[in-house]
Image 1 (cartoon, rainbow over the protein chains, first blue to last red):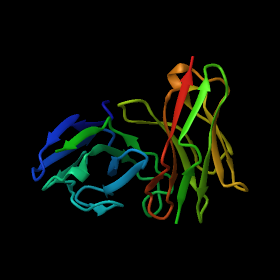
Image 2 (cartoon, each protein chain N blue to C red):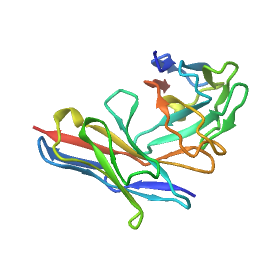
Image 3 (cartoon, rainbow over the protein chains, first blue to last red):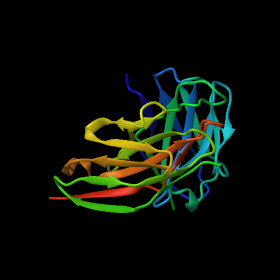
Image 4 (cartoon, rainbow over the protein chains, first blue to last red):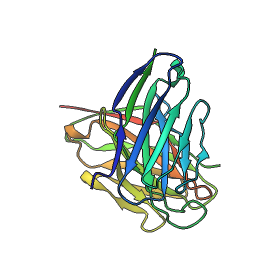
Length: 118
Length: 113
């Protein structure tokens, strides 16, 4: 049981390049999330998904796109990377716990992807 | 809207002394509250969670937190710090309406020998 895994662990991009970050979970969770972590700002939600084939915007969605074609995978795409997207990206997943999106929502986190955009 | 404020960005203690990391929350509903820990260059690990059961919550590695509704606080404590406790700690509230997690800015715990 690997939990939540992220690929790649590190990446350096030039401004304008594109890339896709892959998140996979083997816990059969319905919900999946992408966050970015910047110094002094905690984690901020980029996009999330409440099930296969669904996605929704979070707090800071601009410049990112996501897809959830399979329940176990959640992809985060950067179409044209900018230096402001230099960050550590975390994926998380959780199970459905009742209510609109779950009144109880313990999330399980991946190890992170450190992205630098030059 | 729900929010969480961690009152200290940095806390330094000596090994073997008590730890107190402070967190205040704002919520229109009975909140679900969490403390997560992040060791350097690692992902986040759940320390403990409060979901309207007992107000004193025990977590892993000897940590515990007390939910105080009158003070809107959820402070994290440990009786005796260990060197391995040095990490970043996040207080988190779950938005009951959307299920999203709202993170505090984090508190860096330094443990001196």
